[in-house]
Length: 252
Image (cartoon, rainbow, N blue to C red):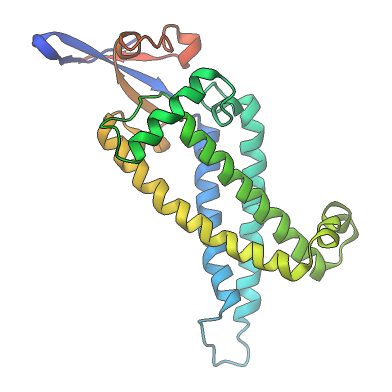
């Protein structure tokens, strides 16, 4: 292990614990989903209300945009399937238990974070991975992703007429009319935009408050915490290498 010393209260040296939180597959899935949703939003908005005027008789703008939209949809589906697999194959911070607060300690933490977001508390509750409230929010976001995938493939099936695809998704238009599916598919895009604004705002805010490298961690995978911080709070969540994926105490 390497360590870094910093002057804490009273001139005491305090080590900084570096924890590998977000594994590479989690980070890749995150950015694939971000990229796919961005492309889907832009191309979907164009398909709803074309804003590019082509004067050439050979231009096939709508067809090209629809093709890009389709590729982005397949990318989103692949990224979601990969992330779903990592709910079970990943480390403790990627595990599905981080997104569904079954433990009482996780449910108790939701109230504190809610108070923080409502400006009723000065400081956020420090967590190594997702806090319980964020985990629940991401669960709903993944639900929206599934909604977009199902409604998108249902509309694609109505055009393609492929038997294999119809076998898997043909049941959905029998439950919900295709026009309602189209409206749901388009409307969910705006929910993603609302989430994006909140997600970036809260990530920047908590990163500034905690100073633990939240924003950087989605690129590097690492977050930083004062040595002994969790035991001081009575939260023995980082004691052994097995629990934190080989932590490092970093000193100069």
